[in-house]
Length: 146
Ligand code: SF4
Ligand code: SF4
Image (cartoon, rainbow, N blue to C red; front, top):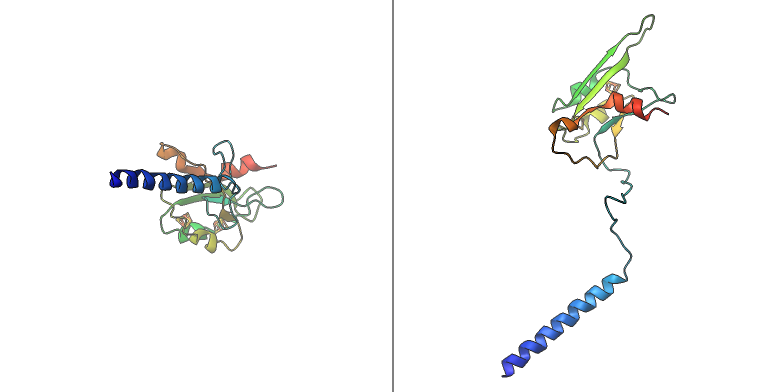
C-alpha cells in the first residue's frame, strides 16, 4: 500500500517539475523561426556555395586566370573565357560549379587574388535531383545584375 502511494507521489512531483520547466521556457525569448515562412539572415562567416562577385557595373570581377579551377581539390569548377574582338583581356563566358562534389574547403576563394568569388549565404537548397546542384554561376550573376 505504501509503495502504491509513494509511486503516485513521485509521479506528481515529476509532473510538477516538468510543468515548471515548460512554464519557465514559455516566457523566454523565442529563438526559432517559422521556417519556411520565415528565414534567418546567415552570419558573416557562413559558407554557402561559391558565387561570382560583380564589379561596380555588375560584370564579373573574374579575369579568367583559372587559379580557382586549379586550386579546387575536387574538380568542381569549370570556367571559360574569350577575348572579345579588339579587346586585350579575356572576359568570362561561363563558370559552372558542381556543388555535388564541393566540400566548401575554401581553396578556390583563397586562390582568387582578385576577390572575384566568395561564399554565398545560400542554404535553402534541398532537392532530390543531382542536376539541381550543378550551378551556372555566370548565369546567376547575370540574373542578379541590377
Ligand atoms: S581565381 Fe578568381 S579571377 Fe581567376 S578564374 Fe578564378 S574567379 Fe576568376
Ligand atoms: S570550396 Fe573547395 S571544393 Fe568547393 S569549389 Fe571551392 S575549392 Fe572546390
